[in-house]
Every structure is written in structure tokens, then in C-alpha cells.
Image (cartoon, rainbow, N blue to C red; front, side, top):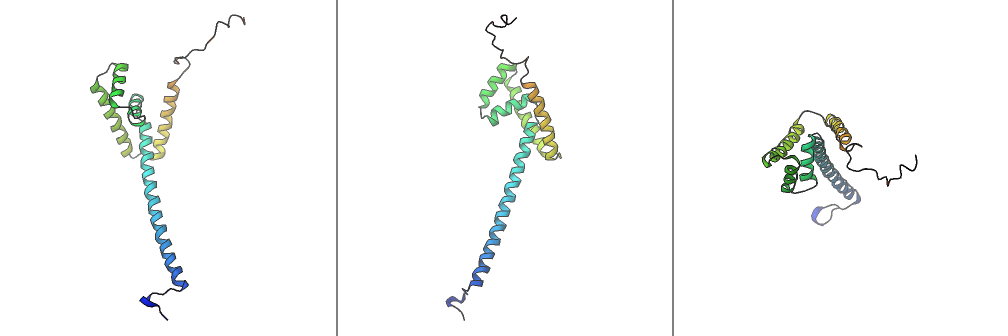
Length: 148
């Protein structure tokens, strides 16, 4: 016994259609998740490569691309600090971006890049603030003579 238009509407047909729709949704969701994971992997790899550039390159690239300062502002600060020319500054920026690109395209696995990045961070961290290089000094208020 059929219905008008020739389509069946019993419970089993509805369940089968529903299962087909669910399978299609699962395939689409799986595809999107895989696509997002690939993009995430690319971003992670770029970040690791960025962590590997030299300290002066890292500082300039961070100010321009991470902290979003203008190139002109960063260049002015760089020239005032180092006495270099604007041409040298732009070479440094290009060298930095090229080094990131070369490392990104290298055959190093992300695990190797991570290990190199962690060792680079340790070097930066140890070099950043040592008691001798800190611009701050402990306030004494002249009380140290009273304890003796």
C-alpha cells in the first residue's frame, strides 16, 4: 500500500533516512575537524619556527607581528638603540621572516623544533634578567648599619 507521490512514510523508512543524514553529518564534521587540525598544526609549526630565530630578530618580529607596533616605530627604536641604518633594520626583518620560512619548510619534525625551541627559550630566559643586569636595586633606607 503506497501513499500519494509514491514515497513511503513508515517508521523504518524514517529511521533509514535519519541514519543516512547522520552518516553524512559525521563525514562532514570529520572533514572539518581534520581540516582544523591541519591548520592548527601549521600554526603550531610557524610558532615553533618563530621561537627559533636569533634574539635580535625575535625582538623585532615580536614587536611588529605579535605586539602590533608599527614598523616605523620599531625601526626608530632599533636605530636609536643600535645605531644601525634603516636598511639594516629591513634586512633584519627580512632575514627573520626568511629564517622562519626555511625552518618551516625544513625536514625537522615538530618534536625536534619543539626541543630546539625550548632550549632557545632557556637561553633567552637566563639572559633576560640576572641580578647583575637588572636595572632595579633593593631599597635600603640606610638601615643596614643599625643591624651591625
